[in-house]
Length: 247
Image (cartoon, rainbow, N blue to C red; front, side):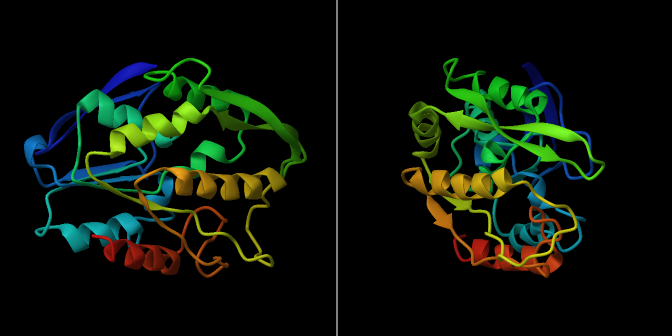
């Protein structure tokens, strides 16, 4: 893993640990305060922006807190933005915000190719013991172009949760869980069965973290998610509304 520096005015220099910063449009960083005045950290994976910035969770959150709270907002800094990404960020930068709002966890448990999960394991082992995270075969999946793909999922030692808890104890943390999906939902992209298992597992893991406030949601349908992962403007509005109740 590389040590990556990213500058955000007026907050200053930040350090991430990964192969490289995520290069697409859903990476977003903004702050209205210097490091010593940080009050509120928003730390989102790709679902913070989803299809477009306009009417996304990030867009709505910024309009809500700008001028009212001293914040740093980070969305998808790395390709894989997981609990380990947040853990490393807090430790490497010596940060203990009064309040953290995050939606990580989903990427930790949903299935991916082995090459992708190598990065996830690497992020865990930056500051945690080797063997804390391991990938395991989940299922074979036929892609839309007929290619057969072996998918893998992650498993974690109990120390993974304990390490996460240790960096969250100095303030309050709000965790946005992934909405389940209605049984009859029709997705633009078919998802393997391990995807649904991983979604449930990620929500259970988040609920098991001591000292955090978890926001759960009723099942989403096509009006709230367009691919089972990312949100429509309506889905983003519903999630944003629940976040504001905890701020």
